[in-house]
Image (tube, rainbow, N blue to C red; front, side, top):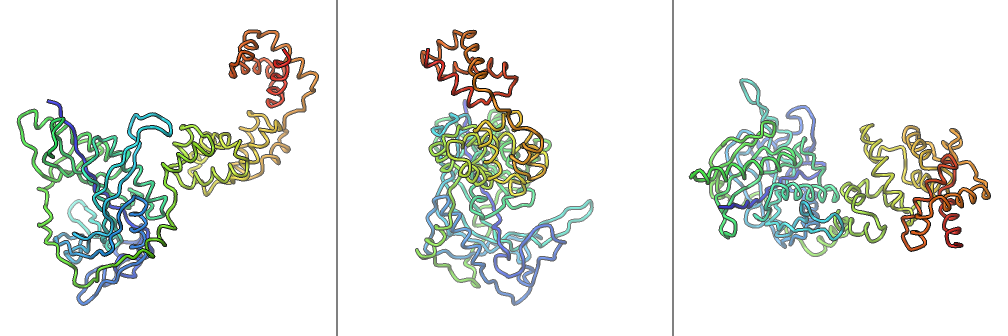
Length: 485
């Protein structure tokens, strides 16, 4: 019997705010243990929570970016459980009236066509709700200590429908969701800092069945790759259990990304186990149209719409767009450089960014914002190449110097003597005539309409000039002579 997987993801995203969800104490990462606390975070007697409006703005933006319905009224509930990382022994969350309902995350299906018309899929969302994060347990050899710095940080839980069908789809889902949150300025989504955490609910069923199987929750998936690997492992484990005559037990399992194995942690709780009830200290929140409109005006263009626009507006190939659009800073850098260079040179600009700028940034461990090569400076280099003032090989050397010093392309070309030597037009024309005579097949193919055949003539001309001929003049001269017959 063949089996298929049904997967739902619960993704927790820390919202990037200056203060915590229900108090003014600072939110942050990397501070000395238990320094980002106050009486509200520590749940001392008599304290009362006050909502952080910036966090509510952020979840409304997340909902709008993902096409959710923003509830006109949402309320707060207490999720009761007893664990050392929860100072109050309950968590303020949202149960039956979340702020965001429905929506979807768009993914490109693994293995689909590598162009703008490639096969995409929208993974539907059940809800997005807002809650407060809990503290962190640090386990030692003989004891465990609690750090409450993280406790009270605004936290979104983004819950998908059970509509993901493979580990690779889950990987694509998280990649797309993470990019959307970063694009919106909602979160930095650094998994190493706990800003994005994911639990996966996985079940299997016979192919063609419509009822869901018994689900297993997989925890401690602390990288997007571990999510993919953990899901793949769990699918194989469940199939093996069923095929050997066993029964899948509803439970929570811990996945070890290093060993690629999992173990049972506990039986899975149901909603009633948490004894939800409305928080008596917090009023419901009403979101009117004016509030939504203000947030909507701040929503950026997301990666997939941006990729489609780059195809249409700049004529960029998939190989470039698939790199540029997933980093908002990189995409903005490209558009600034393309505007300075001219839209007809956009592909050349994209090639320099993807092949050269990213290589140098990676080697230097710098971000795009830290690059000494500004978009305008890169545009200048591209225009020098297009004008034939600088040849491609020299441009490579110039770019490395630009990255190291921040000097302009023209200044470096002058200083290092890298400008192309002026070509005698009579001499160039003779080289072109010689190339046409020696490569009659390429000449005939070009005259017959095969555009790429001209490259078979350019090579001999550049060789005759020892690489110093202006490529633009070579192309123009060859085309003129070929047209003359």
